[in-house]
Image (cartoon, rainbow, N blue to C red):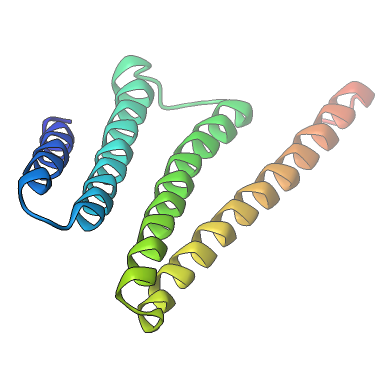
Amino acid sequence: MLIAFLLMIFAFVEVGNSIFTGDHVEAALSAISLLVIGFAVVETAKFIAEEEIMRKRELRSSTESRRSITKFITIIVIAASLEALVMVFKATRDGIEYAVYPAFLFIASMLALVALGTYQWLSSRIDSSSDERMDHGDL
């Protein structure tokens, strides 16, 4: 977490330095990129602290596991999407040939989001079918 906060401080320092230099937009985009990375690291560290240190439980229900996975993947998808967006803005300034990597990063983050939705849908169907079997006394 300390490293993430240092990244955020460097982002603000970079914006401050750009006031005296020249390229304000490039410095702002770089600062936003650093803030996004810092945000992702802080949120991931907070998630790990909540899940592993605070709870201190190994065995979880399927609902708890699904909630944890959803939270973690959501953090990753948000960070990757924001980083792709910043990179698209940088690519429009540098040249369209630099837009390939941001496009692939955005596609990858959207595929992760679709995979998360599929996981949630499938796991909820499994939970509901096991609940029905328990209601009928099959288990």
